[in-house]
Image (tube, chains in turn blue, orange):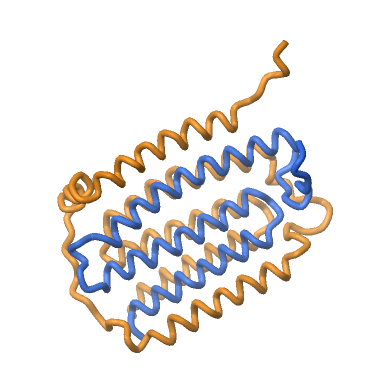
Length: 103
Length: 167
């Protein structure tokens, strides 16, 4: 197996773990952690394809991963701010109990 | 495939699994930090030094701290008394995740023989990355700067403590 396939398999496994966490956990913060794991798995794919691609000197995959890290940081800040706001409103971070759209 | 790769992959996957499976949310935050560190080391293993150190700075330095703050502010470290930590529909979620992994794994293994076996180590200096950032990628850089400013202000406004109804 080529090294690239190994990295892609690790990224696929990490993505699936993150997806399972986002879909099965009850706590909103754990859902955000799962989403972060999925974003990181995508970043690993970008870097792996950049490393084994035909033109690494063009830096395309590396730049995409760096911008993706920046966007993920913004997403984490806003997502955790939303969790705190919802906790203050509903006094729980349990997603199974947040079953109303009306405030 | 080197020994280093297997060790780092096992560390990352173990961190991710522990983050999803553990009951105590503080332990989950620590486990996800281990997974972020493993990913940063995998980036270094792929000769992407700048991305690896950016990953350490942003994820271990900022995102992990934010997660711990959110856990402590919402008192989520106490595990719920009724039922477990998993949702009622956990079986559906697990099935969806398993199906996604089966499809991704099949796609990777199907194309594995046609993937390049090795590539020369790319020599990328930080100077080249900086010149690319202010040259070809200057517009995305400015947009990310705007996005980070907007996200910071937005997060503060969303999470700000609302006073009682103004008279």
